[in-house]
Image (cartoon, rainbow, N blue to C red):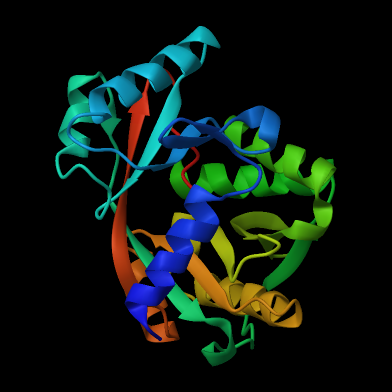
Length: 260
């Protein structure tokens, strides 16, 4: 895999020309009305234009009465973009590793541990299971994530795949993960995958990666992309993903983002 070429396609297809999104001068942003969350996904800034562009986005989202996220990548300009965002009142989140794999090279055998079954969430009951798994894994309020996934399932159910790992006869949700497919691009994004503490280390995360890789392969997706945490990065590396960059979220106003 040519890392430089893949990163360039990622920037072009999933950031600068992301659909649905809207352009605001040198910035591309997503809003909840477009089926996403409120945030900036791409920018083309210089030392001369950065501060004004940041101020314009702050004015836009605060005018809507919302906090928002500015999703930065290590190769974004200017070099001090993160510091400029902090000076403007943003809070830096935890950096993650941008990892990509060629779908054709990945295992698609979802070997689940004993007592675990997979449920595909397509309705409100499934979204609630996903939210319970998210809360158990991350310890954060899943309301914003639930609202976003509901909107995605309502608008384009054929493009989002939500899987929930259920434990035992009672079907306790212990892990949830989703895949978003982007028509006209080479990529699908893998999101979530956090596992409840008592169920970690049993291969559930790996199984959910394989299950989504199988779906991606069936749809002809060329590359899978993950924003990997420190916990998931070594697992993904063993599965065949390569690190091609880093990403750091900067949050302005209320809310803590989506935690995947």
